[in-house]
Amino acid sequence: MVIDFSSFYDFPRDFDKLFGTIMRPSVVGKGVLGHPAINIHEDETSIIVRAELPGLNIADVDVTLGDKTLVIKGERKDENKGNYIRRERNFGPFERVVRINVAIDREGVFAAMKNGLLEVVLPKAEEAKPKKIA
Image (cartoon, rainbow, N blue to C red; front, side):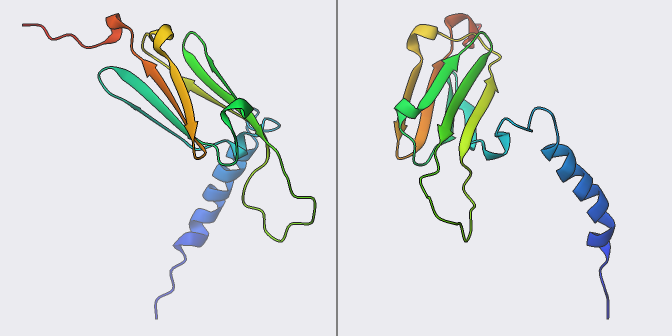
């Protein structure tokens, strides 16, 4: 009979990692633990940011493009008035900051929301697009 105690040896390190994440000053009090999941990808012409925001409309979300950042802010309101048996969805304010390291054509930025999925398309400026040299 073999008993694996490896998970017990890793527990203090895992607990410290979890506690360190929760107690970071940037996390406490800002609702970051309930932030929406995002995917970011790019192609030759643009950067696309997709955020999962179930139950929200585009009017409930504030999307701001700064010099080097894209900020997605909003608030999920808790509609239920009774006691929870289980609560896995987070409510309250959230904010996601995405760092952008390429020049963006600000006139072509586009945001749309469908079925709780926010998509922000950030077209690259001409000077940021790759150029083929013959």
